Image 1 (cartoon, rainbow, N blue to C red):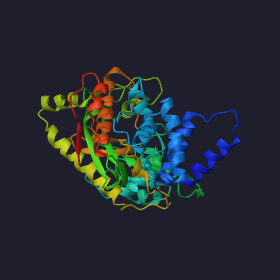
Image 2: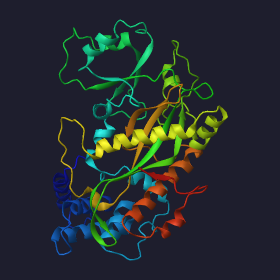
Image 3: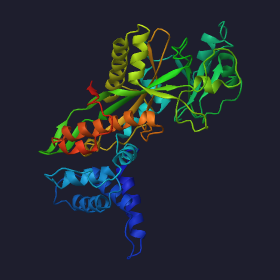
Image 4: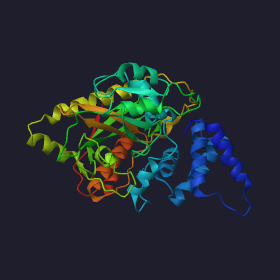
Length: 412
């Protein structure tokens, strides 16, 4: 995931060499080693590492452990009958797992990490909530907010930089936040940074509940890619899916003090605390907008624009991070689609505010209500991937989800 392919190969080869002569390398590990070798070298079929990559990927492909490895094996063997997924009985579970593989763009940590994402997009005031990086910007926050009239109202969401599913999030007042990070204390220089993000207020409510929008984005990095016509240089491509989810808080919303604040403010369906969170699709949202004479197309235009700005900034590397990431120059070579989850919340004027970006959005259906959406997004992503490298996607028809409503990806 960090882009350090050399170290990955070293570790996997050491493990391989530790096996007894009568033991076989696990097909998953064989696929990982083969993919790593393929990223390391793509010089040609006479190259020893390339031939070894082919051998490892064939082992993984024959065992059908991941669609990524069968995809790679079909690519490098130049099979004219390009049907890499025919051996998978449950393809959508395999697709969901494939999106979590380490063979994506290592720099995506700059979107997934909430602190780094804030550093990239904080100046986009039209769709990015005000935020402070704590403890570094504690005094700046105090100067602006300590004496405001709403200092004891719930106004902030404290977020761990790598938290998922609302885990680690804390709803707090200005007074509570500043007390947590009292500048008179001896600040621990190794303390993990948190994002203190202004809560979208007043929020748009549906049936008395707060909700967030999960918008799915499909990303292909720029660079050399192996296609039906050989290796070609391709530009980055970003698609946004018109299929998405409306995620509701489990309790009715109130901006007053409550013993169950989390259930009123948190909208993620994967919190894992046993409380159910209702989900609907974007058809439901559009119907709600039309019923209240709100402009859904204008909302969608704003969402598209904000995603385009974020991804352009990311692709052009116009961001400011301390750490250097050793990205593989061949990450585009595999041609694998990456599905990202952009989370938005709407204010009472229906303006969308980007809360965070998920590098590994949950794609396994949690309920029947989100199964159609998630399978449609995955199906469309792999259709786009297949056509991007010059193969026909006709064979994909057999995997078309139930209740599929047509190709949902809009190119940005």
